[in-house]
Figure 1 (cartoon, helix red, strand yellow):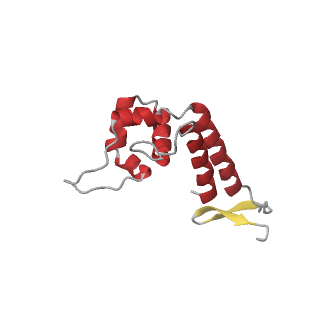
Figure 2: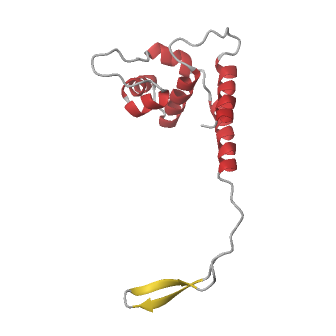
Figure 3: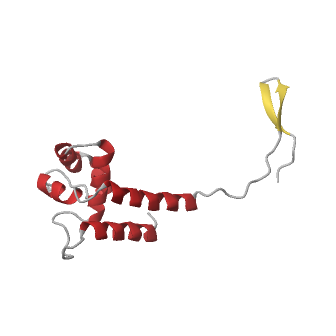
Length: 140
């Protein structure tokens, strides 16, 4: 993710999540993890039990959360039910729409249409292998 876009998103999250609270952080989760799990919850319309299962056992989601994979036998980071409720519930639709608007605007800048090249006229002709396209205007 682009560093300035990430900073904007984290600023929006910080303003919403830490509004009126001391900046001591949230127990067990950072802002990125709150955002990812909030998007997963709203995108799947998942209840809290389903979100807890996804957060603790879905390896792809855990990679997006930035939780390192641990070998068998070692203690892995576990997201508790109440921790998820306390933190992820702080995200609302309005905040996610604001974040989505920022991401969409950044995407439009990246994938803006380039200057249009003149199109080539194509014709086809018969060859022993079948019909083949043939360019009749020189490439630019």
